[in-house]
Length: 277
Image 1 (cartoon, rainbow, N blue to C red):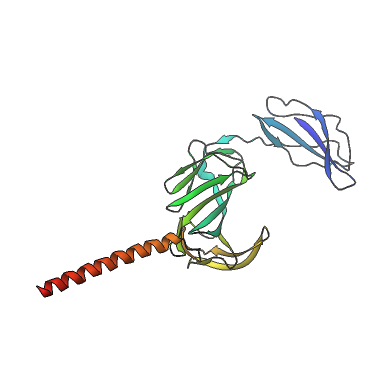
Image 2 (cartoon, one colour):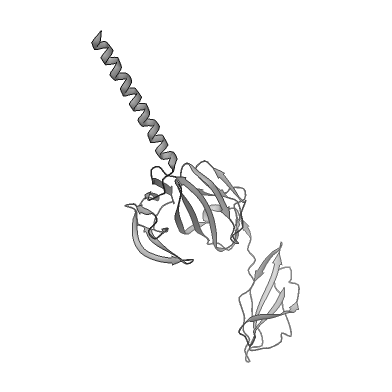
């Protein structure tokens, strides 16, 4: 167990003067640190590492009356109960691209237990829309992550969730046709925890399951936002329009028109020859 001391310098910055004491705990987990330097301007914290993970106590401030303080350091166990993980909030950021919509999903996951929840073997499953492309996932530092498995219409997260809140960030694209596409996605039992964001004036979003919230500024960009309504269903279906049209969309239409025109000419001459005969 390590005792750390934190002080605020003249510039208002919090600095540490290094470990003030080190002791080993008893087999039952109890420990005692004697002769702690009494500094009423400082804050103290107890820390330790178990299997490479850092665990710390709450911050303690000393006073000039008490001579002893009781400090608890919680070292969580490891649980396989993935079903305990709860969705706190899911945000979908919709951005337009040529012939497709780029979707960024940010999930806030809560682990209400005091244990670490290990989903490496069983996986924490998230449903995905059909026919997505360009999938990528980042960890909480923004770096590319590989602790997931991408299946057909679902994503499985394989990592260890600490107690409290964790964040999941992943992206994918859904194709559009003639500037429009439909996104259908399940979020469990309720849509109240779902938020939709799109840059102002670029895309149009419509759904009877959403209510308009207003414009919000995120990272220097103003977004139009919606929230899911309180409904029994947890499946969201929304129509997205205003997507830049891919030239191939018109090519498909031209091919269909040429086929129909050719078929019409064929029928016309066939009927004319029959009449002449």
